[in-house]
Image 1 (cartoon, one colour):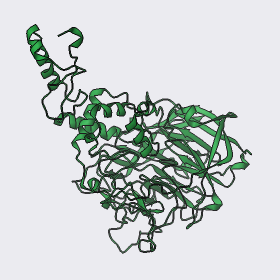
Image 2 (tube, one colour; image 1 turned 90 degrees about the vertical axis):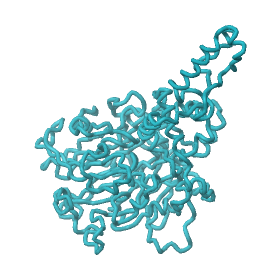
Image 3 (cartoon, one colour; image 1 turned 180 degrees about the vertical axis):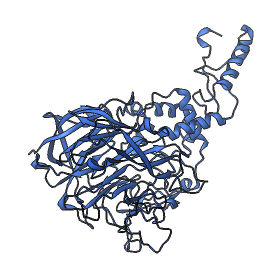
Amino acid sequence: MKKAEQPTLKQIQYASPGEPLLRSDPPLNFNKMIKNGTALIALLSLFCFSHCNPGGGKNAIATDSVSIAAGEISFTKNCSGCHNFKQDGIGPQLSGVTGTLSPDWLLHFIKNSQQMIASGDQQANQLFAKYKKSVMPPFEALQDAEVNQLIAYIHAQKATGSQANKKNNGISNPIPGPIVLSNLVVNLQPITQFPATSDKPPLARITKLGFQPVTGNLFVNDLQGRLYKMKNDKPIVYLDIAKLKTKFINKPGLAAGFGSFAFHPEFASNGLLYTTHTEAPGSGKADFGYADSIKVTMQWVLTEWKTTTPNADSFAGSSREMLRVNMVTGIHGVQEITFNPLAKKGNKDYGLLYIGVGDGGSAEAGFAFLEHSIEKIWGTIIRIDPKGKNSVNGQYGIPSANPFANSSNNKAVKEIYAWGFRNPHRITWTKSGTMLASNIGQANIESLYEVQPGHDYGWPIREGNFVSAELSDNLGNVYPLPANDSIYKITYPVAEFDHDEGKAISGGFEYWGNAIAALKGKFLFGDIPSGRLFYLDVADLKQGKMATIKEWKITINGKPETLKAVCGSDRIDLHFGRDMQGELYILTKADGKMYKMAGAELKP
């Protein structure tokens, strides 16, 4: 056998899973090899490679329990936010995918799908088109062995009956008309660069901008565990939950970690601050849990912090746990807490804390019975009195005005203010007092709701203004509303867009400032992954009517730009903030930057 013909380990291929490995490239000529004494060496190489490097070849998929277990950990950490094995979501359900795509192709696609799309790969571009130009971030930091373990876990998941029999007659394009580009151009002024808490995008997982209600000092949180105070337009660490809470975790999922924060309206005098964060399963006794037979991926914890020096640049004081919620998966957690900024002393809403509790991915995971019920906390907006004591655990109060506080149903969750959400990601109010919630959808619809106490917003039997697929079908499908829809008493969105336009609505704000006349009367928001920027006229927000959404553009320091270009990433991770004066800000998690809306004009 000539030297050039000798097989290399990288060239040796696996047969189908479980078969002996006796193939190579080029093919082995054993008669010739026996003559020159190389057959034994080749056979030993094949044997060692097949047993010492399972999953390492082009056609190999490891089937051993160690590889599968390691792959499950990696899947939960890296993939579960967009994929599952039952229903299509942001990306396709993955059960049975290894029966149609080769392990080698999957490895390269997982490591850098964007590169494969750009190269013209037919399968990659078919997926890109099918999932409406949603791009999976690259995972080049994963070693090939880690990706192969991930593929081993995916391979071990068998196609479910619902997938094998799923219907394909859902509406292919729920909202055919495109969002129109308006003549609004907003100039952004760069404010600061936040410290990187990762060595790859997103560099700083900044998600929310808020302010101290008396001084107006701005604060921004990073999911990695830090709360920054802005001083002279520079971030300084005010509170580091990752250090103070020993069971704190910031994985798995795109939104795990330090989720949200809210200052009590009287923070200047009482020093009370509230936060939510994630901890590992079993870190504490859950106030809201479910049957032991259902997996707990993480726990979300609401904490009250108390300081005696409210104006200090760093927190010093104590904390107490208020409530703890188990979650089935790492997505759709407790990502929003807020006080009604319009409520004044003497108002029944003053000092009451609103909390958006996502469904924890329970519908996609096959446990939809955990939501869409006033007897369950998942998929709700709750309202509590932080200073009260009449909750079941005695750590907070339940306002008597809550819609189910005096329900005849003794199983009702008395904390619930409204229900039927998938992920009430952001909560805000218009100047006229209308409460709004942006709800991140499944595979079709991103929606904005006018929130009214006790109302049902439909998930998972509705996705936006459409019927969601029956749970025995594919949640990726939606259908028209029935002619008579009164039986369910669903409250539908006041604005929505489909996944031709974006994948995850970024909660926004009505402009309350005085510096930019062109923004008066507008509610500005966008799409988290793509960074597209939208607005609607607040006057158009009426229940039973769909407000028109328009797109707007930006300049940065007067120069026309796009967030995608300045971030240098296909995933922007867009978030909005508003200061005490009502002026608006933009946060881009991909590059960890903060901008202020400094001017706007309506260009012809």
